[in-house]
Image (cartoon, rainbow, N blue to C red):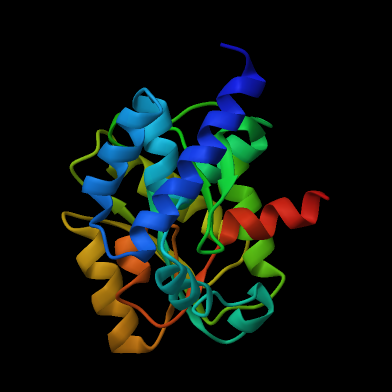
Length: 219
């Protein structure tokens, strides 16, 4: 199957999925129906899962996205692996795995989270993150890494070093339940969460899309 045929199939599947979601179908059920109809593989299903949302959910989430100019004097809580993996993809110019989703968030379609390994692009990506944040003077920046992921402690140490090098006020820590902690800290301190994780976005008031902001600076 040609890339054009795959594009057309995914476009049609996305249209059908959005229709079903707008009609109130549960997403898992709707994806199964559409994926079976268009004979989509695991990658196709992953695309639909991350990109397509109902009109109501898309509108609700998009209203929560803040421009990076609004982070001045604010506390930023960073969903570490979520943001880092996407920025590494940008640094490696693997734009084919990035997609702008219905809810206005840029997402990486590669499912590498639990298998993440520190690599030659890690420090470059972290420096890019610190650099763009530093331009807008946040009050404090805290990175959260999932402790069950291998070498998350080492990654936190690297991140702390780069935070200091970039003269940012902040820290990097590990946590067993990052999603819960991000939401908890955001509500406690009124901070902004940097993430593309949909379930987290649904539970907070303000979200920052750092990968999308970095992409904009490259254009």
